[in-house]
Length: 440
Image (cartoon, rainbow, N blue to C red; front, side, top):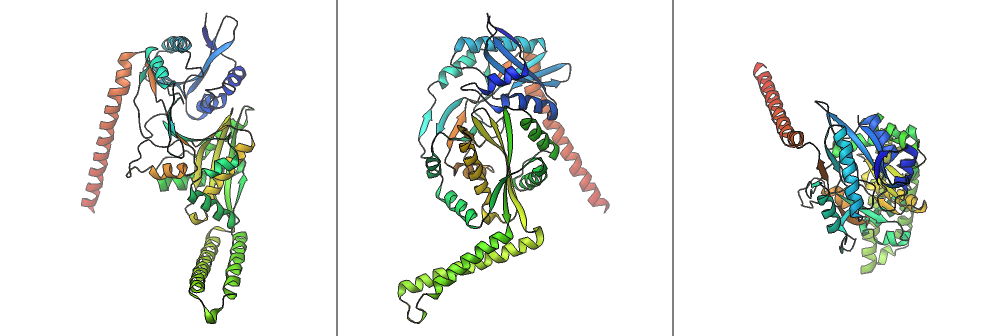
């Protein structure tokens, strides 16, 4: 007989971390503790055990308190279970539903990172052969599918790019786009560097996240949010948060450019200026253009040094490691010197880092399914695509309703009410501004 119970944190984390198919940092002990500290959620570390007290499934459930002594539960990236075992999934669902009802929850939400289909760098599609069966199992277990969303409407992205690190580094690099290879090469030619930061560097990281927020029109968190995340994930032996800082030392870069300029001048000097052939004239024109470009770049770096100093952090990424996977959780970039392509080099360096550490799956953590030209997130998608990973579509969100009346109120009526309030507030603000103009 199977029983759902609270599991000791260390035992829970060991099970999740080492699960063959469903290990995910969003189901980790670290994420549960972080959600408690910064998201005002209550974590429950639950395990399904058999008569010998062996774990056969587990889940982190995050409780969100609601008015009227109600709540709902969210299992980020779903139960840690073998979804191909139909009876086991049904039993786990039943037990979790009973637990949720005992807490007066109105629903339980899951969004397993189960692959529906994926497309490789050549555009070849692969459909998960178990997808239809798993879809039906969840449906028959009582879950309601929330639809095949295309953007970031859900708790977690339904699409991502993943790179298989079981390939050799040469194979991985072969899948990079031509422009990605060129931009990494340029960043290296400019003598930029990528270093691993520490807690003291969160300040720089936060600054770049703010700049990215203002440029890309998304909402980031406060500095304490990132600092707490970094501390919790590095305070647990089973997880790790690593900060990668892409930097430019302008003095070093100017020296590199001076060497490039010297090389170009030497190439120009050996051309027979008095008797140029057609090909030599073309070569001279090309070298002259290169010389002008180098000099323009040098002037730009000198101006940047005047305003920002000699060493500037241009890119900062936070990587989460857990089990056999790593996720590029957050990435911030400066507004200046984008032509150095330090962000490309930063990606490249933490990709190599993950490969060297024996991590098997490198997840770029989120992209879009709507690839229409007017989608404001298309640029993000195209950037991640250039690294040649598999474009992965997950199965989507599912709700198990435990209180139909309050579920209807929460999911249908409350959003309408909030929309009306927002419209009313906006109208009042516009009227207030209009009145102020009339007074003036």
